[in-house]
Image 1 (cartoon, helix red, strand yellow):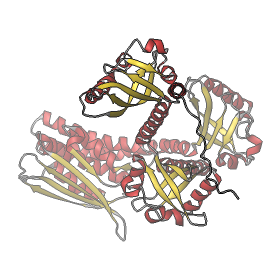
Image 2 (tube, helix red, strand yellow):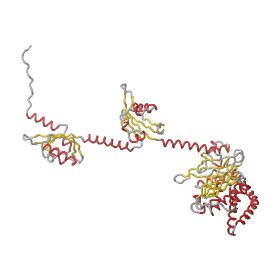
Image 3 (cartoon, rainbow, N blue to C red):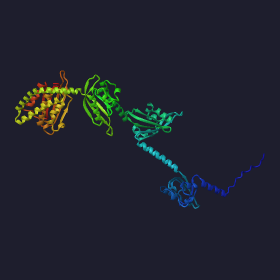
Image 4 (cartoon, helix red, strand yellow):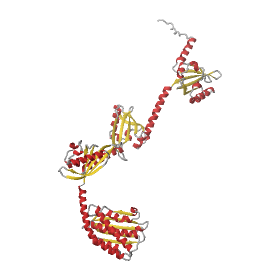
Length: 594
């Protein structure tokens, strides 16, 4: 074994030329731009990467300064920092700035500047390191723009929007979710602020998501990536609401969009209920109602039509309406219907009386109507046909004829009343003109009572109409100074005749001396029915106020006699007149059906 000292390794000597070559290669082929810049900003030396970054060949750059290609908005910052180095306040600085590429486009760089000083401390030149960050800036700007757009969309989005990330257990299973984003609409819809939710657990802030099964839905969406959408009836303390949920996976979490569809749901439910009510009504009425094409082909028909004819719906749908068993009993009836449909198809609304045949072969009088349905272009798309049973109307017309005959007979009885009125009026009249006015007015009251009877289909009259006919003409401002209140009430023929005369006397008196004789008086007429063991009794209150002061009469005139005799003898009732200074008050009680 040798005991000699080991030989030292021989280092390969590096010549000055080799070191200069290494420096030049490092400078020239560096992956970042390297430049030597003079104190006034002139380019002294640049490597290949600087030329690639700004697009200028080396020889062109060496003829200009960095100020010539710096973006104006960044020039003051760069020059200011450069001056601080020249003044000895700093030795280095680092900024992000923009250069104009020779092609005209803007290039973003990270610029790191340090200086080399001479022995006397003055700056000899600057060493600038440039790294192109244009693409990084573009990506950052795109991300910022995307974030801005996302924020803008969510700020104005009428739907609630939230993002939650998963909180997993050691086993990897999802234990909970944590809020990361809540938009303003979500704040409004949930009545919870973003500040109160972001960073909080779903289980703590909205435990109902677990009890209603939404947590499992969220977990499935995160694990499988399958979106989920549903409308859910969601109870709230203020008011139960309907929400439409859309859930989609976002990273290791999910985004949920939800909108309040309560109004639409309620409208749908109301529409369904309305359609069901309409169908129930259409099927419940005895009138025949159907929907046809403009050419008369039956599209829909109600239950009443089927019950009336005894036909099945499937045997009628798709057939011309004039082939319907109800209308095909005579060729003349079919021709009339065809002609009516032809006119309805042209846009005319048709109405006429006809006879239809029921399942037992009976002919029933009906009021037929054809109503065209138009589209936006004013073209007829469908026709609604209805046939209303007017048997009652026909019977009423016959009854009216009978009633007119009966009234004709009653005229004879009325002559006796007129003679009595003439005698009483003559005795109280001071002049021929006053006799004419009083007598004529009382005759008009009788005539109005008869007119009312004739205009109805019964031998009776509605008290509201009776009052209006007798009193309205005397009210100076019409209904503005006349108040009528009371339930629907029909008086018998004797009651309407006698009470009509009483109303006329009171209205005449109000016009001459009472509430209607000035500009401020008012009249209130109220009536009701009092149930009695033997027969219901009508109670009518006549109340005047606002007219001239009232004084009791010194003698009993025809009006008072007429009121007392009519109620006592004709109606079996009674009257109570009170001459209150504020206005006449009267109450009348008599049986309803006389």
